[in-house]
Image (cartoon, rainbow, N blue to C red; front, side, top):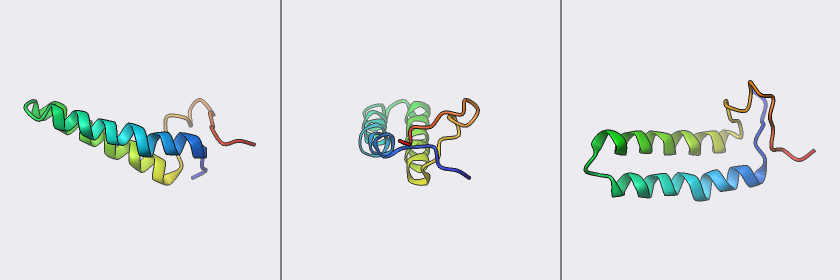
Length: 67
C-alpha cells in the first residue's frame, strides 16, 4: 500500500473535516440514519488520514505528496 496523501491534505482531513462531520452529526441527532452516516464518514476520513492513503486517489493516480 503506497501513500498518496501529503501533510497538508492529512491535516485538513484530521483537524477540519472529521471534527466538522462529528459536529454536524450531533446537530442532526434526531435523524438517526443521517447521524450514523455522518459519523461513519468521519471515521473513514480520519482513518484515511491516519493511514496516509486515500482509495479515491488510486484510480486517478492522484497524489498530494510534494515531490
